[in-house]
Image (tube, rainbow, N blue to C red; front, side, top):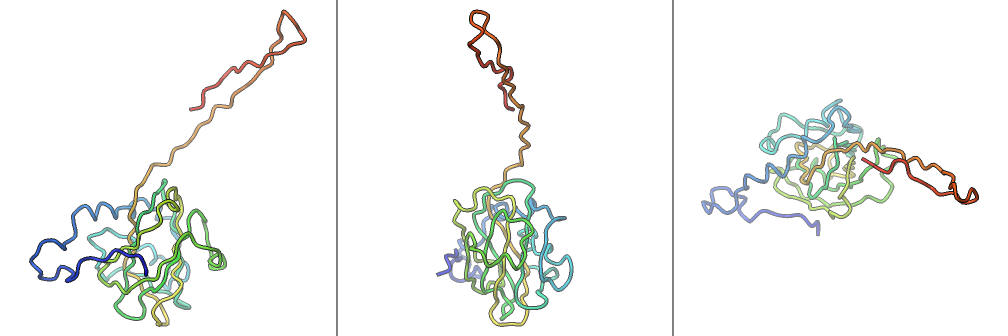
Length: 212
């Protein structure tokens, strides 16, 4: 079992029932792409430099086919995704072609900047076996407790369905975002002052005790 959320049968094609169509809120939920530090995003083993950034796009563009990333030497891809703040990651959607080039397995790692393929041997926070999803309809929910404070997310596409290369059109990230806070800490100075009554006894007096 992959643990993904599946839309109702029929996929909304001409059903006329009005109950299977995506709610407008879903596009808002999948707005974390706007919180990615795109200039620092890396995609290892991409066939063309910079294409890995193109698959993190708005919800209403998830089914467009003009922007995609394809693997180069083999079927693996590794995305290093820095956020501009802190993210609570709740779900992932990954969409490719409806053939053997579609990703078949992903492994998620958090807060390991500049991961390389040599690092993917470590235990991931969570892994998913994927189904082919050319329509970007299947969500894979994360174990939220493991992804509650993510500043950097790595996604390792470890295999596809048998093709020599992997192609991805869309990666959607659902969750909550918090601005990064710069903690300016005032160092507390503690001075020992002499007690006039008894010079053998010293008391510690905090001069500053505010931490902003």
